[in-house]
Image (tube, rainbow, N blue to C red; front, side, top):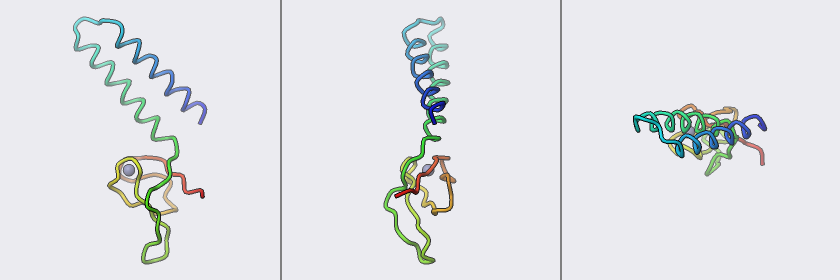
Length: 92
Ligand SMILES: [Zn+2]
């Protein structure tokens, strides 16, 4: 977890630096910024988040709504959202 948090912090600083520097053509700055944003979003999905609206389904399995994409109902034994890849934390 610490490696993930440290990596996110590193990428945020690197992105800020890239945005402050002026690359020619300007399009290069946009490409670099998008790459850092993709890396940051991917790493953030490794930080476990609690599913929303937890409830029991018809088979008495605990289910919840993915807190990131809000489009996928996930079941307790799944560690990740099948739609967006968010890591899930089912602890009380
Ligand atoms: Zn999701």
